[in-house]
Image 1: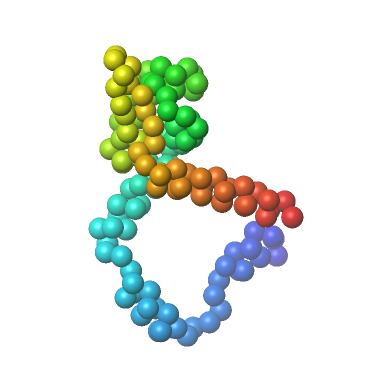
Image 2: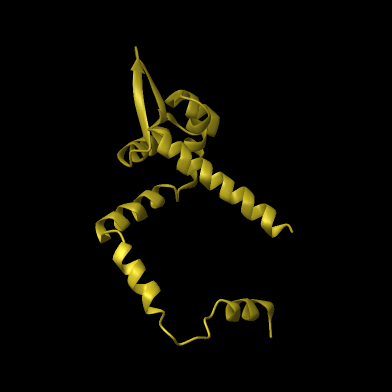
Length: 130
């Protein structure tokens, strides 16, 4: 058997018994469909590499559009478009200082989500290297 076939077999459950107590408990505590749908949409926003780079930049420091564009080697227009998506998802906010608009992460929850994602990736890399 090939190794990918062995891995596929490891993922299959060999039992046919429904653990009704577990299923019922999870069903009872399952968030409303609307909430899970919004969560899926939130994670979709993180599914874009450019937006992840922008969030990382704002995770490190408050920045204006010009700074983010220079950092990522993109146009201000392209960055503004991605910031609009992030703003609509309530992941970033802005403040004006004269003619300059500075962006930052919306709140501590966004920082926590991002930090946890980075921690998860680091843990996964360390785990796969063992």
